[in-house]
Image 1 (cartoon, one colour):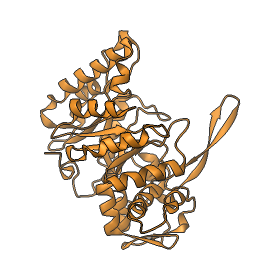
Image 2: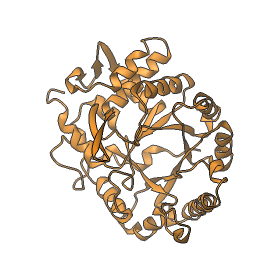
Image 3: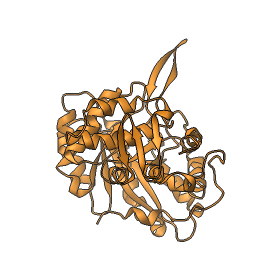
Image 4: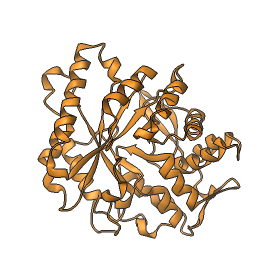
Amino acid sequence: MLPDRSIFFSPDGGAGGGATQEAPQFAELPKSLQAAFGGLVDYAGFAPPAETNPVLVVSNYADYRKSPHKQMVNRLVQRAVYNAKETQLDTSDFLVLQIDQKKIPAGEIWPVSALFLTDPLVAQQSREQTKRFKYGERQLSVFSQLLDGKIVVDSIEMPAQSVKSVEYIVNRFATDNRHVYIEVPVETPQTEAILDAIAQHKDKGVFAKLRTGGPKPPSFEQTADFMIKAAQLEVGYKFTGRLHGLVAHTVTEKKGEGGVEIEESGYLNAVVASALSRLAANGEIVSALVAQVLAEKDINAFTITSEGISWNGQFISTELIEETRKKSLHSIGSCSFEEPVDELKKIPKTA
């Protein structure tokens, strides 16, 4: 059977750790936000822009799991292979975890997500990529048998460029005790077909993933379309990239001698939009609201209480948020944990 998420998190608040103390502690947040943000962040410290050293990533994760915000941290994302050079295929983040297993407290289990960056069928078109992919598979197989259960590889993430790739991934990687998150491409002729194919295997723990980051992230409208389609299919998903902030904002990415402005959503926007997408999928609200809330930059546009969150006349109950986190937005991948925690300072004191 699929892994029980409750075994990975202790219910008490804990003390110490790596997150800033200026933000309200998790236990001080209204119940609606505890439901929204509990276990939300999959920590992928190696990813840009942080690009943290793999050894420090493990140390950071150990600290975050002891912090006053430890209820927000979910999986540790590790690359099955992280060096493109064939001569250096003896390195992966899994090996770092073997070295640093002493950082795992007695009686605690670390949930790990294994990241593959290449569609397995696309990888077969290149000798180098094939070698890298097979190396990652070997690392996954070996690592899953180590450490006496102190670390559980409970999910795998990899992209699919076609329905055929989805079927290949499911047949090769879906197991009774591991989730599979298949990254869906944005705005290709196959996008909807790939999501439909994922839906055929959701009872096997197969879910979707949308890359909301990168140099050209999807628009708010594209993200909203994905969320509504996933809700209609009852497919759970995770996001990854550009969700460090609490609410939407504009960032300037350096490009050459100039800069490019990019609109980013926030993780509060993402949770609220996910809840609204469930209502839109049922025809209870107009679909345009989902994209609009993803673009909302004003934290004061949200009214936050223990009973729920209101935005633009729409009330999302704490119960709906809990259902949304369970059935729709499972988590967000982030290269930083401290930034999302620090952003909690923006929540109005009256919340």
